Image 1 (cartoon, helix red, strand yellow):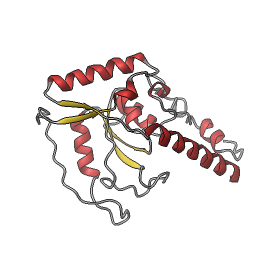
Image 2 (image 1 turned 45 degrees about the horizontal axis):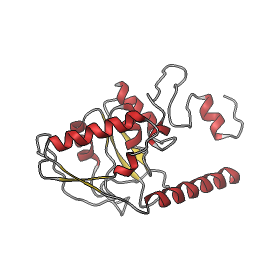
Image 3 (image 1 turned 120 degrees about the horizontal axis):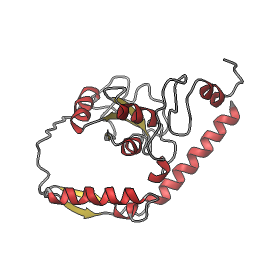
Image 4 (image 1 turned 45 degrees about the vertical axis):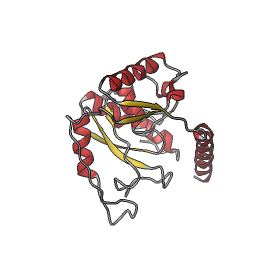
Length: 213
């Protein structure tokens, strides 16, 4: 393979795409995301390949990494389950750092039960990651949600790019209510401003790294 000194060129020549998915690997597969991630308000999530591979049954499970949606967005797009752990639950040793407090590593699986099994296996303290801690984890697929409260960021779904997202979101809320969950609308007043600041900073950092290389 000819090397042109361009990381994107080299990866594309080997079959990888850098815009949120793996189109093919050496021409042997055609794994694609079913809908554009742009419909979820984000682009190029880093774990879209793992989400697609898990949904296609090519792997039993996968572990994704995210800073701002790269586990949950590919999971939602491909119809699988993604778990974005709380800070400190899973070691980030070996993961390329982007934001020290927002970077996460978590499982992407085809069922909630599988996600619980994988999460239980990878959580815990790590001497190579001072932020990782030991904390109890208990899960039962038969636990009731009756009486439990769930915060709903309704404003985030009032005007989605994809009408199907609104339909699925509404159905999920009705399902939770039917099971006895208490839904409470919440707002994150500074969420959008922080989101734009993060995006701007990330683009500036990427541009600077490309210029330096």
